[in-house]
Length: 295
Image 1 (cartoon, rainbow, N blue to C red):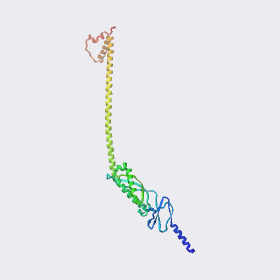
Image 2: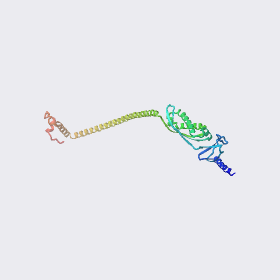
Image 3: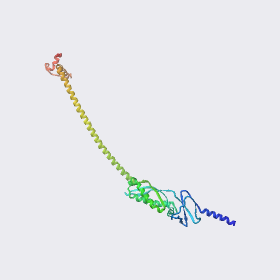
Image 4: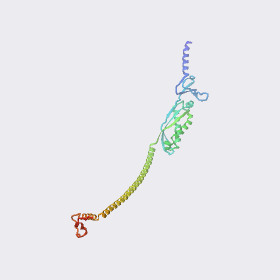
C-alpha cells in the first residue's frame, strides 16, 4: 500500500498542476476542449480574466491572448487618385480583440501576424476606394479627415469577421512619386511666376500713375510759382517805375543828369570805341555845364 501511495501523490500533484493556469494582467484566456473553443451561456467564447483559474487536465488547453490595444504601423503603399496620379501613403491602425473566440478561429489559433495581415488587406481596400474618388488636393488638405473617418467606419464594420475592433486609423504621411512631384513643382513654379509677373505689371502701372501725378503736381506748383513770380515782378517793376516817376517829378534836372551819366558810361566803356558826334548836340550838354542849377 505504501508503495502505491507515493505514485498516487505524484500523479495527483501532476494532474493538479495541469488543471491550474494563470492569466496575466492585460491578457485574457480561452479554453480549447477537443479542438473547440469552450463557450459561455451566451454562446460566446468563455473569457478568463487575469488571475488563477482551473481547467480539466489533458482534455483542455488554454490559449492566452493579448487584450490590450495594439498598433499596426503599416508599410507605405501606393494608391491612385481620381486624377489618375499616384500617391504614397503611410498609415497606422489602433485595434484590439473584441470576440476572442472568433479571433482565435479566424487567425489560425490567435496568430497576431495573421490578424494584422487580414486587417492590412481591409485597410488597403478601404483607402484605395476612398482615395480613388478624391483628388490630390482634397487628400492633402481639404478632405483628409473625411477620408480617415470613412475608412475607419468601413473597417469597424468589416473587421468583425476577424473578431477585432478597430479603434482608430490615421494617415501619417502622404508623399508623391518623384515624377509626380516634379510635374507638380513645375506647375506651382509656373503659377507663382505668373502671379509675380502680374504683380510686377501692376506695380509698373501703379508707378506710372504715381509718376504722372507727381509730374502733374510739379508742373502745377511750378506754374503757380511762375505766376506768383510774374505778378511779384510786375508789381516790383511798377513800384520801381513809380519811384522813378516820383523822383523825376521832384528833381527832373537831376534825373536827366543821372541818365546822361549812365549814357556816358555805356558809350565810353571800351577804350577802342570811336564816336563821331556833333559836340554841340544835347548828348554833351552836361559835359559843357557840369554844375546843376538848384531849383
